[in-house]
Image (cartoon, rainbow, N blue to C red; front, side, top):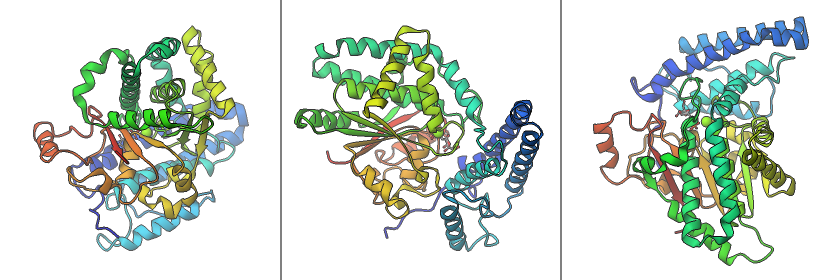
Amino acid sequence: MAVVPASLSGQDVGSFAYLTIKDRIPQILTKVIDTLHRHKSEFFEKHGEEGVEAEKKAISLLSKLRNELQTDKPFIPLVEKFVDTDIWNQYLEYQQSLLNESDGKSRWFYSPWLLVECYMYRRIHEAIIQSPPIDYFDVFKESKEQNFYESQESIIALCTHLQQLIRTIEDLDENQLKDEFFKLLQISLWGNKCDLSLSGGESSSQNTNVLNSLEDLKPFILLNDMEHLWSLLSNCKKTREKASATRVYIVLDNSGFELVTDLILADFLLSSELATEVHFYGKTIPWFVSDTTIHDFNWLIEQVKHSNHKWMSKCGADWEEYIKMGKWVYHSHIFWTLPHEYCAMPQVAPDLYAELQKAHLILFKGDLNYRKLTGDRKWEFSVPFHQALNGFHPAPLCTIRTLKAEIQVGLQPGQGEQLLASEPSWWTTGKYGIFQYDGPL
Ligand code: F6P
Ligand code: MG
């Protein structure tokens, strides 16, 4: 096994991981408890007294969780039987066996940051599924929907742009097509600013037309491998036999505005024939506040379809059609909500790894995917991306991410250090973005 650096963790006082565990996570938990409180009458209307009792139970489990976190208690195993409970508990035991410091127990401020955060969201889910009949309730649904509604104008602008583009797509020459591809890639990149966990669950919508800002945002793209994506897909298009497929997989991140930008990109991939199938991977449980579940995916397409705006509703109708025809396929897998780094996928989820190997290109959206791709470790800035992937190479892949964690590889020597000196929080605010590719050139 290759030697890898230590994990980011809350042990590093003052680090972003530390501040997240100390401030941001408790804030999110408090918001979740508050959301349950606010839905009390809805639970009563739906389920009577039983609903109110369930709400009380969920709140007490979550308050206990918040207390464990704030007093840095040892992690306890999951108790409620669910598809992933055994894998989770095995992983917690494994992490426990690695610890020889502290008092020998995995704890909030002493464990890898990635594990801590994933554990928190998994425990939130456990509190909900332990509280029937409200065990279906998505505590983050409201925030995700609000993000979508608040981004309406930008969404209309993007849908209009896409529909006009599709109408003239046949007349575009190679360079024009490439320009449009790059535009939509950048829109999908900046869409990743709209994650709701960075803002502690507060609104983070898109209310300006991002199409007009692309030129101004270009200097903030630190790594730009868009050309590789174009070469790869335009080559596939040229060399593709009649009945064969070009499959692009998108490992989704946030619902709301970001998901719209991903669907716009996916639509363009089909309309331009750069791909013939797009496969989407979402989460099986509510995750990191705004991550996309199948309910969010279906809900959003339904909303777009029923919009009063002509071009927006045309997009929704087309998207529904793609799904019916099997050109767009949505998949779930529990692996995406486990705490494991992606290099463990062949052992932990060999079926998923085998599926990903069928892709011509995999796009990983967002910050959390980047952390899992690189193991959330303290890599030097200039370590090659291929090395940090630590053996995870199912197919050519590209990460499309705005930076929201103290981790970045593949920079020029000195580049990261320089940024750090002039702008200490450059890698945690979402201001910078990357397209980082790994695969044949
Ligand atoms: O809170 C931790 C974190 O992973 C941050 O690094 C990031 O702000 C967020 O959660 C997830 O971001 P994204 O939605 O882009 O994966
Ligand atoms: Mg997210």
